[in-house]
Structures are given as structure tokens and as C-alpha cells.
Image (cartoon, rainbow, N blue to C red):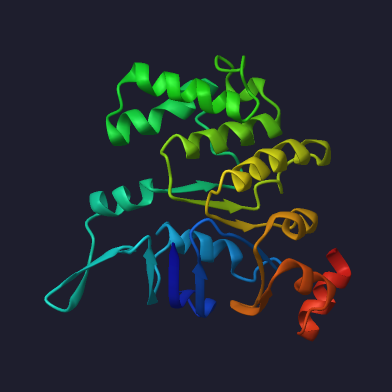
Length: 250
């Protein structure tokens, strides 16, 4: 599903991604962990072209992201075409980024209607189904200010699912939540895992990564230090830096 090769990204003189390569199989769940500033969130944002890469290439479901090949040369996609690609990649952010003036249902409906031209009645039916799926039946008419942080994040997940994405990206989706609200969001994510959704999750929830990931990646200083199956990764990490990190957080 995802083939990212030798990605490089910098802000000024600060190199955030240093020739990072990543593959994700269809239906696989990959959790990325690491200290703050290691490049985890930037990697996610590059996968759906919220950030431009300076070198490397990204192919998702067979399509080159951000570019098209013509006469053996790569040409940047027009913004409208890039947006169409992005629409097939769901993303859930640390902060919920809901429209405060729209109800929960309207937040879920707006993208299918405006981006894909889905009729309002169909978008509403699908939106109600998705809100029920994330445990928010009966909250359709609530505005974000009327919902808890956990509920807002579940609306954000429903909103991403409304576009029927082939890939879901999660950028520390529980980091802005009070501890007692974390479980309800992780439960929704577990249900997505069980449904076979391809997911890349940047997280600090080690228990979640241990339980649901097919593969865990540890990043530091813009590079992938180590990756492996959860059992081996958490019980017998190879790299000293991985062991040091896990000793503090796991």
C-alpha cells in the first residue's frame, strides 16, 4: 500500500527526515514511536503531501504521490489533482481540527459533499452510520464545544472515514486527551484494526503499539533506528538507543 523511498525533508538548515524509507503492506498496522522532534509527524505529513519532500518518492496504492510521469520526467501535480490524491488518505491529528460552527454530523458530511459531490441525504446517512460506529449515536446535533476531547477525536475519526480512505494516518491521536479519555479513542482504533484498515500510527501509547501493531518503528533524529515485530521489539530490542528509550517509556 505504501512505498516511501529515501525521503528527505528539512526546514532551513535543520534536516527533519534523513533518507527515510518505509513500506506498509495492505492491511498492515505500523506504529511509529520515538522522542519528540524525531521526525515522526513530519513523515506522516509527507505521506499525504501536507508537507513537500525535497528528495525521494512516495507511492501509495500504485500511485506516485504529488507527481506524474510524462516522457520519462516527473512533473508536480496541479493542486486540484494533489487534493484528489489526498482525499484517499485519511488523517487524524493531535488536535481535533473540527469546524467549531458545524455539528458533529455536519463535520462528518462536509468533505464527501464538497470534495466528491455526494448528495446531502446520502452524506447524512453515511455520517450517522459512522458516528454510531465510533460510539456517538445521539450526538449528531452536538457542536464540538459540547463534546469531550475524546468525543471530538472520535468525530475526527468518523470524518476521516467518511471519505472511504484506503489508508489511515494517525498523528498521536491521544496526546491532547485527558488520561481517562484515551481508552475510548484507542477502542475505536482497535475496531479499525480488526476491520483490516491499513494504518500508520504515530503514538506514545506503548501498550496499544504492543497489542495491535504488525510492526513497530523507532525513529530518532530524522532516521529509522530500528523496526520489528512487537514481541521482539519490546522484549529484546537490538539497538542500545531503542533499549534506552523503552526503559523510560514502556
